[in-house]
Image 1 (spheres, rainbow, N blue to C red):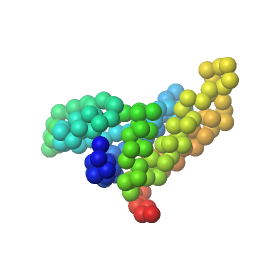
Image 2 (spheres, rainbow, N blue to C red):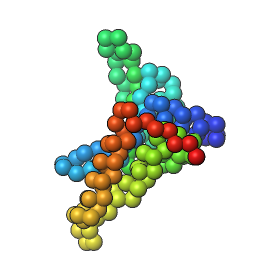
Image 3 (cartoon, helix red, strand yellow):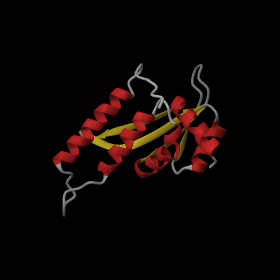
Image 4 (cartoon, rainbow, N blue to C red):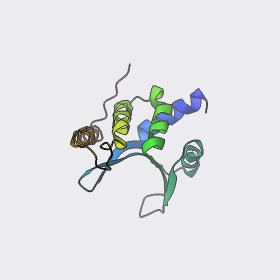
Length: 143
């Protein structure tokens, strides 16, 4: 991808995308990146550039058909790192996603159990991401 394509994608993601952390079995789970739009071509182009999946939602009432790209965990981090230098609105969410990704696969030594300290850090980042994604909290930080 060219620098211009990455800058375009970052702007598109700032407007149409979402970084979130799922909630599974009473604890934070996967890191997700999602983008939805009524333009099938751009969503398929993003899927061509980055690993992930696309779902199609048929028109309903006054809404048009829409396509939704989604990727998670390591692939979500790769996507965000590629566009990070160009992000404006979702830069803080991306940074938080990088921090969360460090905690995704942390398990206790010799066990599959996630240590309490890691769970607490994951929960804290989940809560912070939820606040950032709340409608009306779209502050732009220009550096």
